[in-house]
Length: 471
Image (spheres, rainbow, N blue to C red):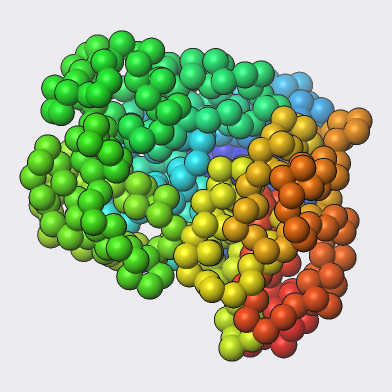
């Protein structure tokens, strides 16, 4: 702490920003921040001693020694303008997180999909093993009721975001890469640019460190190939410059660490983990979706690298109970089940709906709020093919995030793509309230209703539960 001056966060209620603010408060720093509205995150930070402002105003940065922003904050924000006028240093969120990570033995989890679940599972494993890690992840871990914590050990787990290229700011000891695919087309023009950011991330791993990479994923395979590695990887022998070891995981024979004998255990899976032909044992995963088997393999690999025994790793995997907004059951009665999920990319929607179909024999109703005009414009055709496992699709208006509208880009582009894919029951209804009314009027006994998207659709689940009389 420096003379009572604060580290000020513009948009402090965001899940990534709030996590860093929590860590700084735990470290004894003075923190202030602003956001457009009060939220659970701002209330929790205020309770911990942060100075919170509702609304953005120039005077909010007075008394700050540093201003932290995310890519969602525009340069025209009055707090940014005032910070520049006063000469207060402005730092990107990723730079601040990287600073905290670099002070410890850093573990980053990166990828187009699965970052939050995998980083949360990694933090749960290390905590269960008694390693007392610090962590900052992109969602609230159910068993911890938090998305960040300052641990007392040398380990730090961080979700590393590629959406704005800021992945290059991190220099971890261990890097997990779950998958690589085109997304965030507001920033990336093509997949080549995405590959280049992940290649830069690999080059930033500390000497003697490790990469844990999903070799089932074509994008990851391409990045590894461009980094000079021959595929399939040589188990235990593949190295990047600076003696960085590469461990591939997956479900194919090419993976050094793979899952065999995958079986459903109700709301999750059991499987045998095999490394270099050695059967490590049977693992139980208590979250739905076969994509999470891959995520858990990454965490098993992490456990092996940090020196944990198999029994401890198995206990940590079994202890993980998911993250809020990742297949979160909002209400369940004999008549209806309501689930909320963050899925907002076609690949994520396919995985989430496949998980729903594996759990539910009845009708699946998907309420989807597209996120960003740029993503809708670029991936409308892919969205149209993503809802095979949904019996009914209800589309709302696009959630813009920080974007301005793009002429001609509406949710009807996805509706058209659904029609081209011969989906039998797809509807565009407009507002979230209209979606609730539509679903409430057409619900059938035995339905599973999923609210899907990265915007404010998360409000729909509880509201719809109240409409339908769920308790």
